Length: 96
Image (cartoon, rainbow, N blue to C red; front, side, top):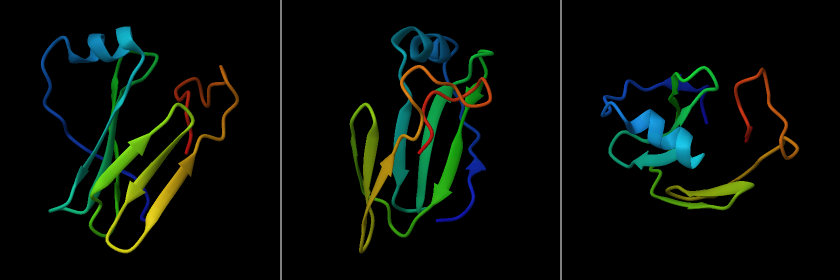
């Protein structure tokens, strides 16, 4: 796993409002480019789009405190390290 990069994401004008209203983020994989991307909204209303490289990421399973990523030869488990209600740098409510 490499250091996160950012993804440029074109989105409709109400997409960030919808994410914020429903208190959700979007996780996606791109098998062809070997990327895992997360799309969310920061408290200042700006989009957050960190992206990491994995070898052939294919499947995701998500719970409220963890997510699993299936890759070519491994299953990765990511655990949230923040306490319920805790924020990191006033930006992130989950850190994996």
